[in-house]
Image (cartoon, rainbow, N blue to C red; front, side):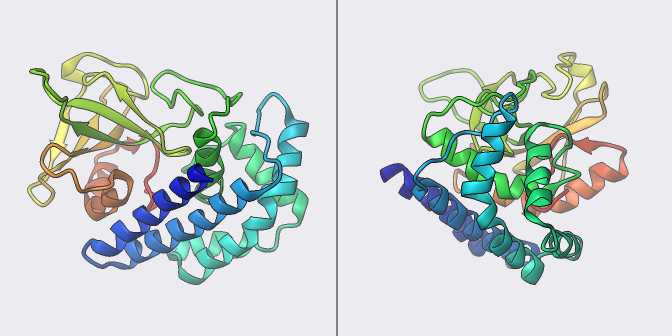
Length: 268
């Protein structure tokens, strides 16, 4: 039960951080999204049995979704339909018309890696508390683990942070943050998580005076990027939430022909 509290509290902490930042419609939505995910996490943990999803065991996966998760989808989608950005409202309304089989198939398709988060933001948002609770319980997931992706669930990095290394003379360490289960893991400071490019001249960094703690870490080899927040300047930010504040930098990157490895909470 201690873990249940910590998982729910973490989602609530993200919601509170969104409310503490300069107000905007998208941050208000992020706050509500995190609270809705907290409810899913609590309900899943309280379920009598919640087997981990497995791309190699579709029967067990379908049973888990049918018994524990599918009943929580409709309330979540109604929150998105009522308070989300226009594009997500349309998607949520469409999914509210899904029958049980279709709803389950959508989530299984995402879980099996057949589509990216860019194509199915809502499935990732629904599965996020599921994956995070499984991680907190120490489960082992049978999902594809590509280099540069999450060592627990195989999800792609949503954002990067730079943190100080206690009692060390070297520069700040680089952490990647999974968009599916929320895990943070240390990663090479000079390497593209998408294609493993390591040549410094192929890994440009872009900054904006408007957001001094944020930068775009791009790769000219694959054309992708991850946004990074420097926590050595201010340790208060919660990376995936504060990421939304500098959305203008993502829009600039898109105009430059770059593609974010994994969309953030704003869906970009």
